[in-house]
Image 1 (cartoon, rainbow, N blue to C red):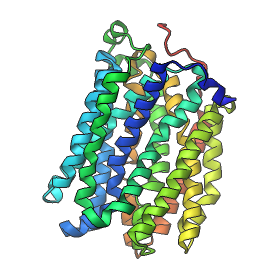
Image 2: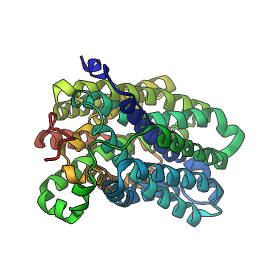
Image 3: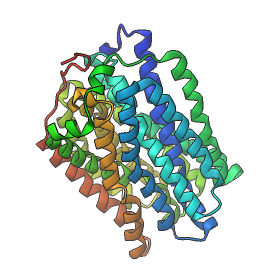
Length: 404
């Protein structure tokens, strides 16, 4: 069984997994705070929802910059110190969002936050996958990726419980709390056994891309489909519930809690499942099962049915995503594992970063019909994930610590 792989873990392995999971959880928490208050920020700055949705686009678009910068630093100086630096930066910038005085300042801060956010995933994923046992990668991959919906879940709870008391600026002030994670990493997390200063110092990213350009291109296309799949079903869903169904903040927050529970369960379940069923086949299966759930998620008329549909959609969307940390690290050239997985992932994010604006404009051009906008993107993304996963390869048994 997949959970047998957890037996006999060292204390260091447990701390690495915990720190990487928490890093991605708290990073996502800071990111998803915005999706709950887009309408309110637009009202305060006197602009359209699509203008504030541009902040989401900028955050996603600049994540590849952070993935590359922090990834190269992690390959050169080690995973652990650069992870601490990255956590500090995204925490400070999340907090700074609360003090934006106008739309321009708001957009600049969220763009810089995107740079910091982009660095965390690749470093945390490489540190984790290089540390755990090969037979545990599938389960740990699902756990690590479930940090994203876990952060969304915490943001949902915070919105449901605190928003009416502290407003949107107060919500962003909470964003300084992830900085406490630095103390835990400094005290308990060792450097990756797969990192080698001499090996990584001897190569440049241009050399890596020259040798592996076909793999890089394929991985970017796959991550583009995956990011449309996730952000197309997440980023504007609270706005859809507010503007099209006119639900109160408590209702929106409760539905978000439920679908993020589904996302966490999906990531854990299918990540572990992929260890024996295969990475690619698990991705295709999840994308296929998401298709019939999209109608219930986008076109239901009651809060109960919408919550059920959202739970199912996120169970399968994040089920597919639960495979990604292991899959990309297994495919990555070993001399650039700090850079390659995060960079191709975030370049896919960059291409898909127009999603929020695209969906908002489609909805606004069709009488605020968010059902049409959300379902169209979700169906196209699911089909793209299936096709690209089918065309790819995998490397489940690769040795990530070996020097070759």
